[in-house]
Image 1: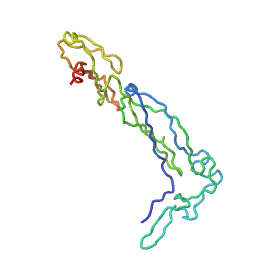
Image 2: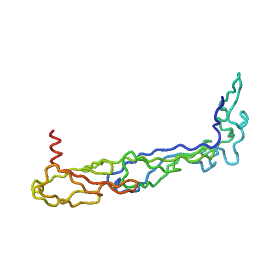
Image 3: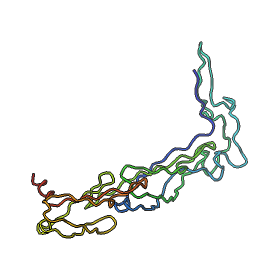
Image 4: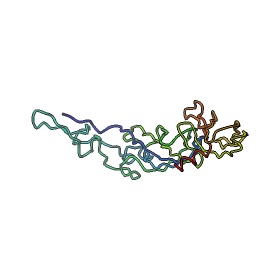
Length: 233
């Protein structure tokens, strides 16, 4: 058998940040400023972990391979070098700023652009905004997970919005115009005469925008009498 060498550049860890937005912000899109605590490359030693003027040297125990091999029988076994911990190098004089780690903890402010139509559970990937890599490795990514607050009037179903609106019996019988709350403001709806109690109406293209930018859903509102009957049952 053998083993994979741990030395050399290593990619930084990915980070997750949970961000809560209001229902209206999810409908219209918004930019949010967040603060992320993360490990960044040490500015003093440029990530080497060694004090300036004292670069890391080759490990004398593993001769820079990061592994120690032995052959007790037929198979050759390899284990991580305990002196350099698999890096193949040793630091005789650690950096005073990062204490030999090569990274320091910093708090970074980032502006996150949240697209219109985003829903709870969807995430945004910010490439290169995770933790710094080691030994010159690439930086990880930051994943911002969205949580949308519930709305007191609308219930979301995909890109469609459902709600209940009280309609007067005279409006149902004789017809008329009513105002219905929408995400862009009030919408005027014409109710035809002889409308049945509990009827559902559709406002096309007035619902939640598709997060990919392909159109919008609808608003479907039902006469509140139907909701009241459902609660009684």
